[in-house]
Figure 1 (cartoon, rainbow, N blue to C red):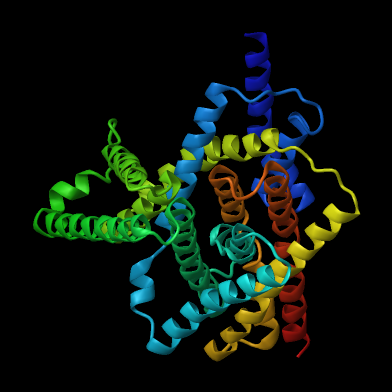
Figure 2: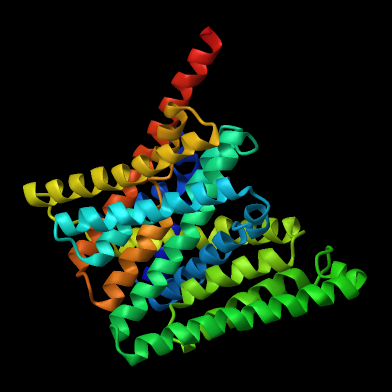
Length: 389
């Protein structure tokens, strides 16, 4: 009991103070929370042991994190883009994964490691762009939309990979693909039904998003998240992927959901998501930092930057300069959450061991620190050049 109380106090202190320390150190808050967990956990002080209640809260936080990530996928914005822009934005993540698997094959990495090198996430991209007041600029929108498409492609690759590992290319694999298609069709039908409901009864629907003691909007969103996560697990898709899909569907059907997103972000990033990241650090076991490990980590970091920067040069066709395209490639190289998702999925599927999982977590930390820093440096130099000219 005393040990549980100490754990609660230490984690609560981390939730409270890590954002301030991260701002001072100029690192993403999620990276700070993982580092704090590493200090508390088995790698350093060993003050907090994994427990059932921590495992539950971290898993819940993980689901919410993926659901909120899905909410950020604005499919309507993508559908209104020109054909040329759609081709560019789709080509970038496809080119990223082509290079990732090419490099992975060159170094004989497991396929899940190639996926970890190639995944793209919009989380840190949005955070940095908001901080720099770039989100509503042409440059910011191009990076944001690239991140969205990249995240959708990354989730699709992870989904197909998990099906392949479980069934290979046997009949069950194709049945799994069919189930996935039926799952998406069913979700689409539900989406159309809800759109019709909203169109016919706008006043009744508006009530769901107004302030009320029962917080109906939050209840609906969480119910959608849990139901689609459970439905995904039934057809052998990871629940976290189901949560991401649920977020996408919710954001597509209910377009005016700013208040819902704000409330969910408050409880998610204010409490449950930090527990998840701290718990990742607590469970992290620092691999022995010998020449082999450092060389492997360095290779993965360079590969992660290379496979993002080279395809990002295609942003030149969207009217961005070379330096902005390279800066954008650096920022896209920090898919912190999805690297952790990939590492945990790889360990769960048995395709990598705990040692390699921890190296991938180290990769997420290193790129999570370096990528925003290098982006800010390149972008700042361009701003200085613009001022001087």
